[in-house]
Picture 1 (cartoon, rainbow, N blue to C red):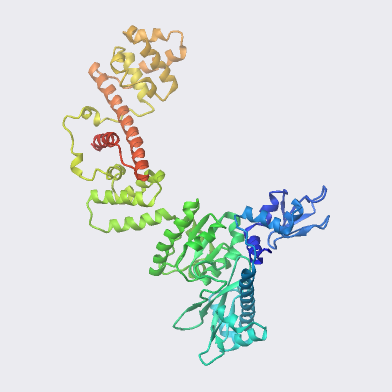
Picture 2 (tube, rainbow, N blue to C red):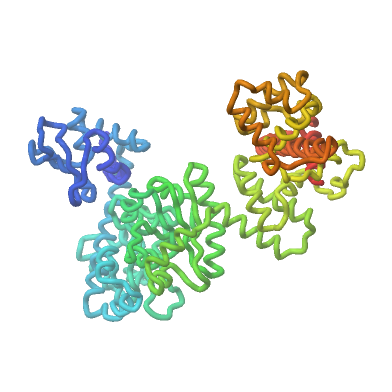
Length: 595
């Protein structure tokens, strides 16, 4: 059976000819073309040209040329159907072969495509003619240039009730088919009348180039500002995106699309240089639209009007976009415009650079959603425990398990609670659970002076045991050598611990390193006053070593607390129960670190 022509059109839209041929032939940019050595004949000077915008290749040496299907046919010596199958597999498309019923559907679609094409031409002539003066003035007032009018095929539907009816009839389009296209409507008394009248007409094209729908914008006051094409055999409301046929090429450069609400917003952004903008065609943003964008871009900016309706649309769109795109490895960011602005007014009043800046400051979807909920919590009357509990619930609901700790820091800072309060709130909601325990074995070391910083505590330990080597045995377990970050200090300390039974005085220590001039020099410098803190006696030295040992223990407990916290996050994220031992150890550490 023959292959549906609509399928091959979609295949051309999906497969980027430059990338595909570039995987076989090294290509270099030359003007608007890509040039390389022809794979079909031997040559030393490049004469093989690829024209990405037009979608074809041409060799000026051997004469080979054609579209991407022709390239596969010639390169792999395949028939047309087999070449289509090769490309379809690469594009992740399921091939559609045409049967008699499909042929009838295709014929109906082709008729509607033709009707829409004729309508587009009719509207364009009307805008340029005498009837289009008011529409041209409207375009000028909105800052729509002639170049944009031509790029987007903008037109005008005159006030006549039968102008388009007559145009379609003259062109041989059956009026019943035109009615199915949504261009005209049947009269109760018989016959048909124009559906669009006295409106700026903005057509929507499929990614394969056919006109599939229209957006009619009233020029003045009207009960309906916009009238859009409803569902037809070639157009499904909520599935397509305005200007995706244009934006997909720009999106290929940086894998980014900007989504706005209205076509005129989109036109304004393209005119300002943001040619990767698309519009949701006046419908609520849908999962089908998100999946369609996923074919062309990995990063999405949602930019809706800065009014109540726009905020509501953004909130709904985020959930849809995240579900359809972020689970597939894409990212979604939210653009915040100033109050009262829409993309069209913003870029016209403030310029392209200002819009680039709001794009750069756009928030990741998770941050936007968290901010929205954080604001609600901040304006409510909640206890600190309730705020911590609700904040933790937001994190677990809205963010991936692997990022819970990252977002706890963010949420805790905004809610003015501690990160540990968020973690503990998972099952330690009662503040009374954190009451101090009088007989805690850690009470002596809990309020540890942090005067011994990581960069200097090793020197303090060495200086103390140099003065009183007998303390080595007492602290060898609480201050182990592996906790010394500095390798030189660690090696000296390890050797002292190994020979601690033979060391009575500082002279014994220096004798131990008699042949190690570097160590002797270092220890001698520590022995001089002014290089380290001096202590009045054994109690003072022991007190300082206690502080250091307590600090190291605290670091161990914090590290273990983080490990347990991650284990708990993983279990909760997987919906599994917490083992009693794990929970008990975590609660114990949480209580200690709370003090």
